Length: 264
Image 1: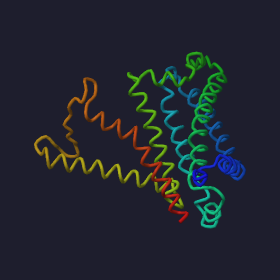
Image 2 (image 1 turned 45 degrees about the vertical axis):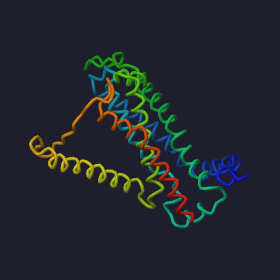
Image 3 (image 1 turned 180 degrees about the horizontal axis):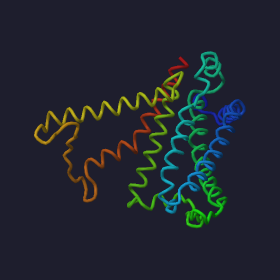
Image 4 (image 1 turned 180 degrees about the vertical axis):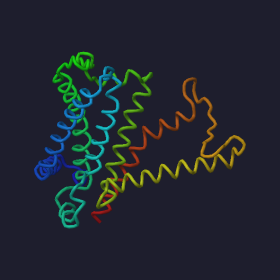
C-alpha cells in the first residue's frame, strides 16, 4: 500500500526497539541522573531552608528541572552527531517520518510524563526522609507535599493553563527541531540562535517604537497599543497565545523536512 512508504507499524516498532537497544544505557543514565538529582537537590534545599513551607517554594525547583528535561530533548537524534553514524542511520530501513516519530515518541511523548513522575516521586521521598532538628527549629511537617495541580491553582483561568501547557510543548519542539537542524553541539547552537532571534525581535520592537511613537518611547522601552478583541481578551494576549499554542507546528514540520533533506 502507498501509505507503507511513509508509515508502517511493523517498521516503526522495529525502529523503536532498535533505538532502545542502541541507546538503552544513555536513557537509563538519564533517568538515574534525574532521579538522584531531584532527590538530592530537593532534600538539600528543604534541609537548608527553614522557610520552605509553601507549595510555591517548589517553583524554582521545577523550573530548573524543566531545563534538565530540555537538555534531554535537545540531544535527540544522537546518531546525527557523527558523520559515519549519520550515514548508517539515514540508510537504515524505515521512512523519514518513522525515524522522526521514533525520536518524538521517546523524547517527548514518553520521556516528559516519566520525568514528571520522577520529579513527583523524588520530592515526596525528599520530604518523608527529612529528620526534625529542634536545635535550629527545623520541622519537616511544615513542608507541603508537592502536587502539580497546586502549581496551576495560581493560574486564574483554564484558558491560561492550556496556553502554558502548549507553550511548554512549543519550547520542547524548538529544542527537538534544533537537534535535527544542527549536526554537532545542536543544543548549544539552538540556544544561541534562539537567543539571537529573541534579541532581534526585541530590538526591532524598540526601533519601531521610536519610529512610530517617538514622544512616548524612552530608551529601550516598547510601546504597544492594546485594544480588546473580546471582553476578556486583548490583542497582545491573543498574539502571545497564538505564538505559544501554534509555533510547535512550524518547528516540528521544520525538523521533519530537515531530516528528510539529510536523506537526499
